[in-house]
Length: 189
Length: 196
Image 1 (cartoon, chains in turn cyan, red):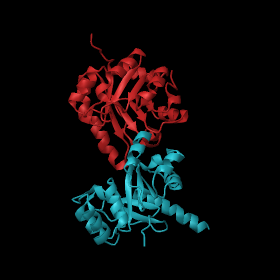
Image 2 (cartoon, one colour):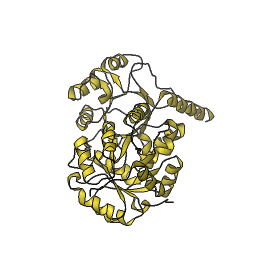
Image 3 (cartoon, chains in turn purple, orange):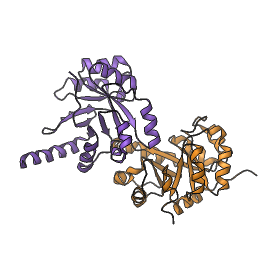
Image 4 (cartoon, chains in turn yellow, green):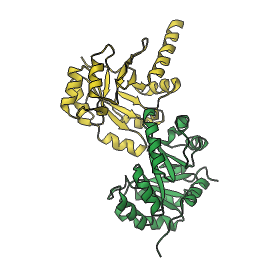
């Protein structure tokens, strides 16, 4: 069975326990950490659903690393700058998300030139908030699923980005606000 | 007599008077940029080794030229390439490499440090790097986000340019209202817009 991408990924440094808030479709993304912390977190009561594999100190950038993270650590979503690693995750039935850098239109096009365009490989649009400013043709050119990552800092921005992207990365505090609002909406119903 | 670029204060004054600068990635857009009111032409691609004739055309149109040393072809972003661009008559150099700012200033050109907005947790480190590099101008990408993130950032001691996905006059006004000196844009219709 193919893995699925939660709508909200809550960013964590792996050194502190971060739980996805209840009431929303959410998981935890570990980034900017080290290998020992990643392993510890994967074996804890709040294992990550996603790892930004290039930002894990001590972890290589090769197939062995992808196999270890998706296999031994059972993390189903891999974020990476390396097309071959994203493709490897997809080959293993998981989700590989390739960083696509959207600082300007020329850079976006160049970034997409390296995309493997294979099944199961989606995109991490960086910075995520810029997705609100992309034209329809630019959005259509970005392989899905699309994860918007970076500078999404308010409930309004998060909701707007979710209208365009398949998923977003937010800080724990914003995830809690989104969850609280969702509970409120559900209660009114 | 060799060309002497304007000092940074003059460069900044030119942009302040006409805040929409032309960003081009090849010679095909140069004629239109030269015919516009844009005060500065930012060359973001092309061949850095044969740039001299383009610089002369730009100066002949009474405009200034800024070159992105990290992105143009044929050059490595180091001190020798900064000397090369100075020799070609370039007025300003853009780079994400903070350590080049001093060399750019030393050559009499305006030093523009490009800051990429990635995510909030990396802003402090980026801002600290700019504090160390002491550029004349900071260029923020994607510029269209400046109005959204200006509250997250400390005030810089130098003027800010914003580039990236700046496509409408509304974008320009929002960016200028957020405190930017000007914008760099590849949208031809905006070149020279919002001038004094």
